[in-house]
Image 1 (cartoon, one colour):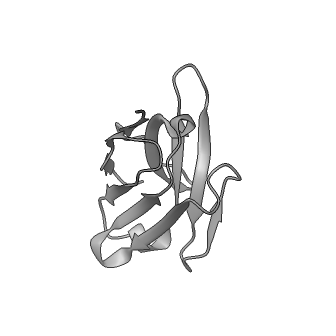
Image 2 (cartoon, one colour):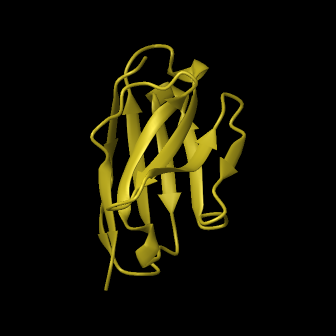
Length: 114
């Protein structure tokens, strides 16, 4: 397992952009596929995007074409670039390792509102 710390959230107007970061501890980060999830109030936590060790990516249909996941193994960090944000993107965003999952971090709040 790794320790995960998310950052970069905030309040943004519809159509705006944010870049989330997730810093991971340990020397094995490069061996993990990574994922971003989000949880809106009163809803379950949903998968947003994944990136494997070969940097192949997959996205939920709701964010395709707007969000981009990337990773920098030298910095033990995974990113989520979010463009053309919509009010329905409002949620707490979390990152995690994929299979096996690690303990959840505190997440970072993203609020899209005018």
